[in-house]
Image (cartoon, rainbow, N blue to C red; front, top):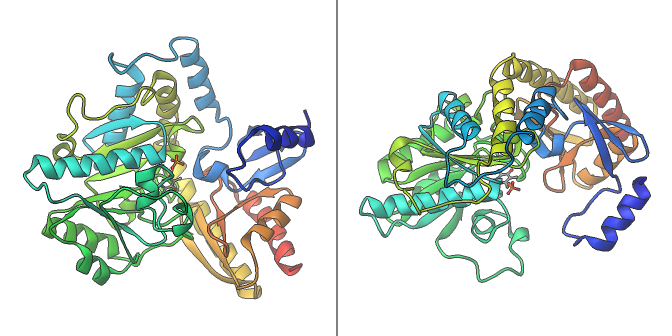
Length: 398
Ligand SMILES: *Cc1c(COP(=O)(O)O)cnc(C)c1O
């Protein structure tokens, strides 16, 4: 089928929950993807920070092929070899001591919310049930995680929402200090806000939040679903600030394109998830964990993180010089290879994305006014250069 047939079929049979671009992608390799009519694109979104090693990375593909021919699924009633190996690798490269696997970012955050509440009850603090999260945050689309999300647009029509959630301004320590109380179970934060507009908090903010949690008896939960997995140049984004949470959630980039999520915890916090307390049929299944094992090994080895840091700095510099000569751009922010370009009022990010698409480049938005770039961590200077030429052209034409 060509683009048109695929689009028509989707429009006819799928619930229209996504504002999709009129494009059907059918093949990918590294930085490149092809649509059903054979047109090539350089992918500067990577499935929204999912394909961190690029499309169809040979090590990930080989691991999936190998595992698919051996064992696709068994229940978590049994031990699963790649699941344990992946957990060990994640523990060796993070603050965590224990891992629980699930299938998505929302599900990982659900697990974190459940664990935080149960942890407080287990230590004799049954009143501590409230989850504090940030305005403009994004934590998922299940009932609990959309309630934790600090954006009204995801909530409209879905009430009654679960109780025990409250929002405070992001990057505002005073507001958080005022909000934490004897009912707070945990503070849930993205170390950098992704969907909320690629917002990097002030230096020292996350460390101060850590100290606040310790002083007031709340757990600190980092949602690294988007910014983890090497996206910002360190394996977890919180490493930049030298801060470790009690719980951390991962998903998007973890499986190299295969759906998988994870909840990482310290030894102490993890004790509250005993047998029967939480579970998932597919969580950590052999296929997903084999793919993630190959993905994580490649991200922490082979110079991937160094390359991400170098390309991120190059890309950000190039965007800042473009901004200096282009009145449509009012700011550039982000870290590593998660970059946001803020556009002047009246310029819609979606229109710029469509202009880039017409020139053979995929990019994203983070809110109405912010362009989002999250290319594979293997992106090269020449590709960044080509994108910048196209972006300049689109912005000049506005
Ligand atoms: C994408 C995202 C989620 C939700 O992940 P799903 O896999 O879509 O459920 C949660 N938190 C953050 C920060 C995200 O970017």
